[in-house]
Image (tube, rainbow, N blue to C red; front, side, top):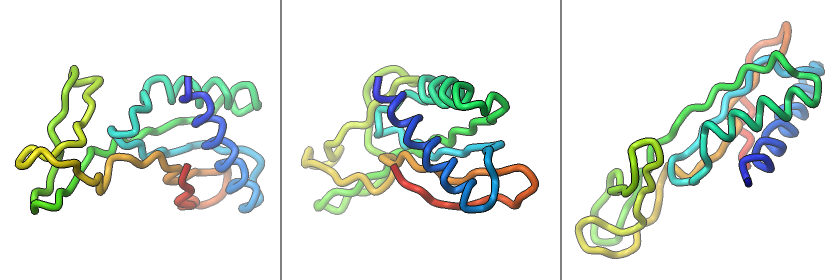
Length: 130
């Protein structure tokens, strides 16, 4: 389950950012999670909350913002690539719907610590990538 290792890394970076701002706990953690990462947001939330609880941050609020995939092809096509699978588990294809060539994802592959809030401090927009 790689969601656990992703959660551990995100929490480590959030704790580091909080410490940089003089805080020893994180109240809210916001993650931008691309659909094309194939990271399950429900499992990631569970892992974040579980790991936070084992570290003494049982009051952590986790916000996960889904980022839809966008892609571009050398043939000139750009947009949201078609996907297969159920809506909840949709998987974007890496093929151009116009010519069938491989596409380059321009968004939707990020798993990013977008921001944290700490007690008695303004929001920290760290933009930490994992």
